[in-house]
Image 1 (tube, rainbow, N blue to C red):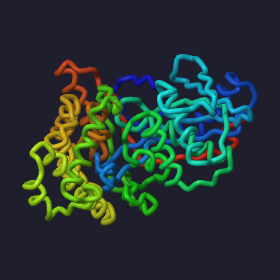
Image 2 (cartoon, rainbow, N blue to C red; image 1 turned 60 degrees about the horizontal axis):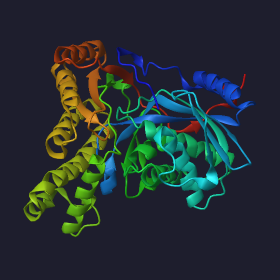
Image 3 (cartoon, helix red, strand yellow; image 1 turned 30 degrees about the vertical axis):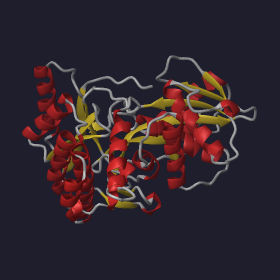
Length: 409
């Protein structure tokens, strides 16, 4: 859905206009496309996960933040059961769908994600109908930054207001996850959607995927501690619907069943050696990653609560090694980005997201952003790779309706 340009840009937080500034432009585009005013403009962010990768579908723990990059949605309800979708990053056409005809497999491409939310709401028994929806996103696709969750969650929060559903944040996240699992066919956990809906500014979301209602906000004051977080988009696009992600999840579920556990989250660190001896060799690395990654989340939360965000550095490094060596979801570009950042003085770096491409995060001291970014860019050039896009980000707010005045002339 989104065209990603690749450039070295670490001069500001997110390098995108603020949501309030963009809202009026998105509303104007809506008027040109559909005639008349939208009922509102909503925003839902992408996310980057500090630590806790491939743990959510194992009922485990994660620590994401919301990004300044977001999907904006201008929306207006309809009474005729027609769902009309348009993306500023699409081919210019409006996709017309009948809400009553929505079914898994019936919609292809980016439109499956917003359509899936409407389907999931109706399937759950909520009285929803059609709408005119115009999207404009600054979340890069294929970068491991949850562009699909941003799409889904923008629709979820808009429909919640358009149709007076009054659902909680975790309930909306579950609807969005159901859309991705049951309609778009990606067997993701709930972390991406929870981050997009429930994150708050200047905090990381401590997520327990088994009971997402019990999530907690953990202060993450980058600027106050003289730190910056770089997101390095390698330009290697990934598709979690291609089967590799599903195979990993199936392997984890098989391991849990063989161990007699509800999920791998229930395997304690001290029990890992015994589990290693009891499992088929091909499942051991998956289990080892999940158990040690959950422990890394707990350690990261502890360091943040102590006000020591710099201590996340070694945790990020360990997480990347585990994803590379045990879970095997890294790739040459993400490995190079992490290594180049570490070599240039980053406190820690790791790939983030589902893997098979996407982005790397690097925690750096303030003032070293350009040096670290330049080292990564130089390493990519020497390897013959496309120049990465590098953003400096801060924890942003989750999905929300933008101020009404920003959505009107």
